[in-house]
Length: 392
Ligand SMILES: [Ca+2]
Image (cartoon, rainbow, N blue to C red; front, side):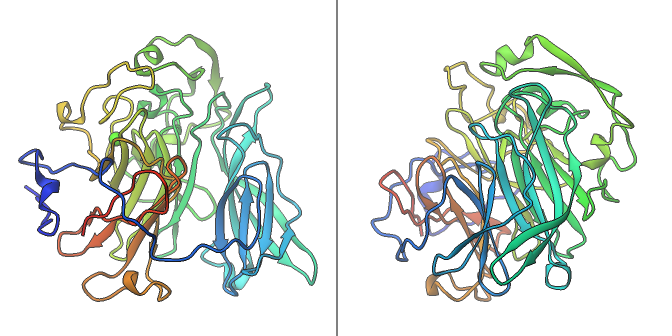
């Protein structure tokens, strides 16, 4: 039995189940002011991710399909050589990450919606390229798609977050459910999974289903109205894999919906943030081979009000450590251990703070890591006009 020691926030335990304390942090009251000052230095068109270079400059993606190199004073330079992306709603150019070897070889990774042949279709792609920076130029060279979901189809909720293992040898990639629900429970489809790959995009050794291949073909459906409608959604086509279906051997965990945040904590544990439907955003501790339940269970209902079974009904599925109803709509997850924010400063009892910038609620959340329990306690600093939470 695990029971986190939240002595500083005893109210969190009110109503908690006796065995596992799932925390709903959604209704916590906001704090009045953020512990930092916001200064506008540049403007972007739908910026989605940033990656800091060793010299302090940033690579910033725009979902519409552009990549910029920007200084901290706001000078922008568009990076040439970005691949074509399918931009629509949640699809587009999404992630940018420095490779562990960046300092020696300039390698970066991009994640994006790769256009399909049929109009309105796409799939998640992971590409590696070399960033070349000149005096007044920047470009990507030798760009190569090292992994992609071969099942092109309709829908948003791409995922596309990357985290590197603490030993820098492996790459974790989130693949969202594409608003099709059922693929998240299909071991033959990447959608709704967290994959663990080598740095060149191959199935990583040591994965739970290492060496296993999947079905040679899978049915493809369009996004469905809700979890119930998805069960009987018409098959729009059958995808036949070109070669062996490597999905099982790539899979680390399954049952994810909209996994936008993925990061290793200073203690080496992997955490993931995903959107729930009408409620039920989740912070999950990611452990190999586990099934995180979507769309079988959720601490929320569908957008149209159709109910979804509670995670409490399925002890075989991994529950979130924290969930949010109402939602935050988390856009990312990062752990901060720098010195810029004294209150966030890492110290022996707290080796790092995590931060969650949110899309829907215009906030910054700050779940704090508590090494004494090995868990994250729910502590937040809001930026927004909307609800945010502070508890400790
Ligand atoms: Ca879940």
